[in-house]
Image (cartoon, rainbow, N blue to C red; front, side, top):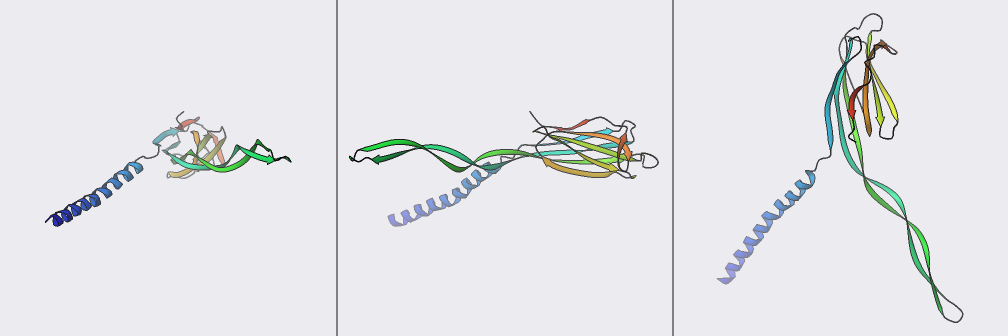
Length: 195
């Protein structure tokens, strides 16, 4: 009788462990994966050229991603070096020795994606194109530009992406096929990184 009771208690304990272990494992996995990276998402515009014949609006999305940045780090250690003289006396001194080790640190990058819809309300005659010029200012102070045009009746959709932008602006204007010539809206906000 005692033997049967021990077997039943053992089976019950094994069943409890078998049921509780996956539940605990899932709980730890979900808590680890529930930490989502920081992100930003918003619409921008509508912005018009100064003659109101070109319109730009869109959407910006920024996602923060962490990665391991590997680099070589130099360490200095003191190594004890001992020598024996002619009389058999031991003389020791500490000598600094340099060695390199491959180490890593967590770094963060912000990847952005900008979508735009450029509408042209005057697609005939002189200066028949709508233009949007994006100005991207990176965290290191460097600046670059992206230009898009629409010389047709129907709206055009554009998108571009990059990383580590501190500010993104747009300037809506009118112009010819080769570039904007006037009626600038001035630089309007699309995205500003949090300080």
